[in-house]
Amino acid sequence: MGSTQTATFGGGCFWCVEAAFKELDGISEVTSGYAGGKTENPSYEQVCSGNTGHAEVVQVEYDPAAVGYDELLEVFFAVHDPTQLNRQGPDVGTQYRSIVLYHDDEQERQASAYVEALDEEYDDKVVTELVPLETFYEAEEYHQDYFEKNPNDAYCQFHASPKIEKVREKFADKLAN
Image (cartoon, rainbow, N blue to C red; front, side, top):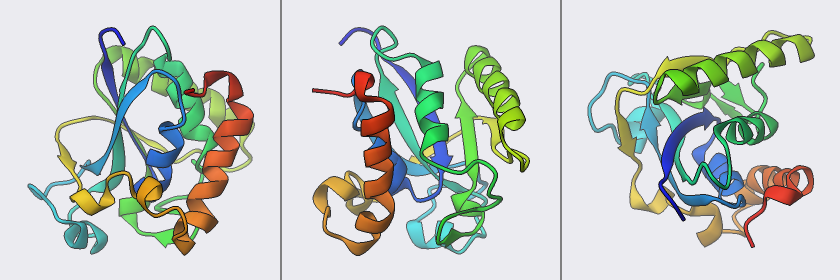
C-alpha cells in the first residue's frame, strides 16, 4: 500500500459502519471512535448518554490509489439512511447521527457535492452533518473489530450483516481479496 489518507464517517452504530468499510480493497485500517462533541476523552457510557455531543464514528485509513474518497462516500451513503435525524434503525440519539467529518477542503468539497446530489434523489431531506474533524477519540478496545469478533451477536446479525451483504453485492468490484 502506498501513502494513506484518512476519512471519518458516522452513520449509526460504529460496529456496522466499521464492518462495512473493512470489506473494501485499499482500506488499511478502520477504527471505531467518537468525534464531533465537546467532552474530552469520552467513554462509551458518556457518549451513549447523549450529553457529550459526540457521534459514534469510524476513522478509515485508505490508499487513494486503490479507493477514492468519492468511492468511500458512495459506500458510506449506501449503508445508512442519511434522511434519519439522530437515529439509524433501532439506535436513537444524537450519537447515531449521520455525519461526515472532513479532514481538508477537498473532502469538504466532495462530501458537500455528494450530499447535494443525494438530496435530489430522496423524497426526505438529507440530514447528514458536514463538519471539520477537530478531534477523534478511539473507542474502547472491545468496540474495535466488533463484528469480526462477534459475528453471531444478535445485533450484528440483524444490523451489521445486511450492511456487509449490501457492500458485497453493490460494490463487488471494490472488495478486498
